[in-house]
Structures are given as C-alpha cells and as structure tokens.
Amino acid sequence: MITLYARSIETQREDAIVHDPQAVEMIERLDYDFSKYQKGWASQLGVSLRVRAIDNRVKHFIETHPKALNLGAGLCTRFSRVDNGEIRWYDVDFPEVIDLKQKLIAPTDRYRYIARSLFDFAWIDEIQREPQQPLLIILEGVAPYLTEAEVKSLLQAIRNRCTPATVIFDVLNQKSARNSKRHDTVSKTNAEFKWGIDRAQDIENWGIGMQLQAEEFYLNEFVNYPERLPLWARYIRSLLAQLFANSGRVLQVQMLS
Image 1 (cartoon, rainbow, N blue to C red):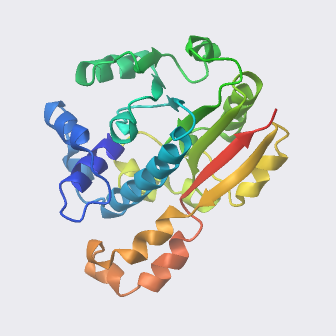
Image 2 (image 1 turned 60 degrees about the horizontal axis):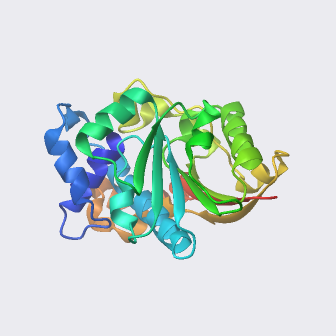
C-alpha cells in the first residue's frame, strides 16, 4: 500500500519521475486509509526514484529477453509501465494478495498470477519457459523485510532451479534496517525491516553462485529535487546526501551456471 500510494501521488505531479495511471485508478477503488502516509515525503520520493531505477533495468533486460517474474509483487503495476508487447510476466504473492489484485487488474495470456508464498518454491514449476531461456526476477520492496537466512534461501532456490537468471532487488544498509520505528511510513504499519547489508559485494561470498553486476545508489538523487524537500531539509542537502549515500540501493546479480 505504501508503494502504491507513492506511485499514485507521483503520477499526479507535473514534474512526475514516474507515470503510473493504473496506480491512481487502484487507489480510487480501494477501501483503505492512505492518509497515514501523507506526511511521508521521504518515502514518496524514495519509492519514485527506486521505481524509475528498476523500471529502467527491466526495460533494458526485456529488449532481448522476453520473460520476467515479479516476486512478492503486492499491488505492483510494473507490467503496465514496461510492457513491450512481447514480454511474458508472472506476479507471485500470497493467495490473499493475488485475490485482491485480480479484482483490480485482470490477468491476460502474457500477464499471469501465481498465488503462492515465495518460499513455496512450487511457483518455479508454474513458469512456462524454454530450456536455457534467460529469466529476469524482480524483488522490489521485499528483501529488507526478510531475514538474511530467508534472502539466502530464496536466492539459492533461484540459483538451483531458475538459471540462467538475473535478479534485481533493493537493499538497505544495516543502520537503516534497524530503524523501522523511525521510518516515515513503515512505522505506520505492523511491518518491520529485518535485514540490511553494508557491502553489496559480500553477497558474492555467500557460496550461492552469483555475481554482482550493478549497484545503483538511487537515494543519492534526493539532492537533485530540492523543491520536493521540506524547508529544513533544503538547507542541509549536502548532509542528507551523506546520510542517504549507502542507505537504499538497487542490486542486479547474475546467477552463475
């Protein structure tokens, strides 16, 4: 709900970073109190920057590879933003989440839902895929809410059963992961962060068999949008840049054969 709200608000700005009319429509149809997120300016901007970063990476991948999986999809609308007319897309999430989403967005031949927990790895068997067909797997806003052991387990399953695969996911540093109660929107829910990592390169030492291809520090772009910041924050833009320097990042990893 936090990310859906952020995309909806962003879309209605004249200087929108991302355009997601589907998110606006969904907000209007949902019976949910979004007002508790209205003061979360940092989350709203941060989510928008993250969405753009991931969207760009997805678009680049599907220029040559026509299959993607969105794990822990929630009310994500990425398919509508990146669809090139050929991509085959799967959203995977808990049955109750998929049930809600189907009422808002109908599946199609190229856009399908899989109603399973991420850790019920039977979802892998439901993917229609040619042998050795490259696969893109996206986990947006998922990994920080898992334990390190759960992240490793999920990536291990992907490595063992989905290779060749590229995985795009976002991470927090350890300090940010310890501060759920101070977060401007997550603190308004019962959710909490459980995992953070300071050096992205450390995942290569997990013994899973994956290579870090890219690390994008999307929160560093806060300083490029001074008009979005509260007055007090505009005067300490350089300090904010330092505070956010290693906080939220998008990682892209390649699973090795």
